[in-house]
Image (cartoon, rainbow, N blue to C red; front, side, top):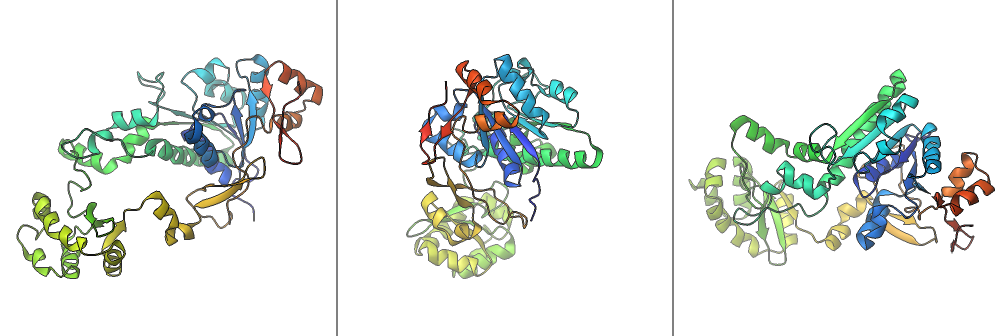
Length: 407
């Protein structure tokens, strides 16, 4: 069965998460992705285990080419690759691609059918368009940190790069929309996605309330400010779970299951508004009941009776979850030396993509010689470019051992 994007070529100039992850999503749908890195490697390669984790997760099955884009010969190779591509994705520092003659306007003038996607920190049109941007800055400036944490403590960031990751999904979605338009009209498009816009949009319910009422949302810890109980933590004898039962019917059912039916009739807890006003007292009544049970016992009681709850897992417990295991989100890939590594696949299932697997992230310059050969460069020309430092090429012998490039 043909994968959705089979035959589509993507040139990925991205580093770290947002752009490489967007290209990865396209690759998992069948696109061929060529990853372009500096001759000394993209920034993620320099930050140890976290960087390797990013490469494993977001550069699977890509072909890796290492170029010096500051050299006109490297720029020419990049132009040749782009000329044979359908999609370009990049998130380099603002202005860098333009300075190299590889910006969106230049490329789309030469190749009007191409789809050129740029991920920026703060957008391309405002006063911060030239600022470097990372996930944490977007969390701070969008209001995410302001509403995260306990009310009497300092603002908190989310415990992972939520904005970077979501920006990748948004970028891939926009690229697919532009590609469908190209199939219909033949015209390419320019895609712009910023971490700041995505971070704001992630909070649409909060922003919607603010726009309607003018009231600033406040930090409430784990509870939701307008619903109760909702996202409230209930410690058990061996762990904890989170419970949401904020409709009157569900709260009454929760009280009945805990053998405390009188709580649903208590005027302090009889309505959602009352429960919000008396949340500490409500938790003071509910938590002792959960403390007598194990997490498994509590989950069985609630889930079997239609009350929304979730065990609060460590990563190890989450990975061992039968539901996570059944999803197939963890996949095995093979590195250049033939070693298997476990990493993450894409969080969707398509009938035309029955299984995600294959190769891990490319080594720096792993496919440089191969790709240049496809562009028409002969061995002597490739050796000359290597000797001049314009490209970096990693060769691998049949045992999987790395071999230094020819000089």
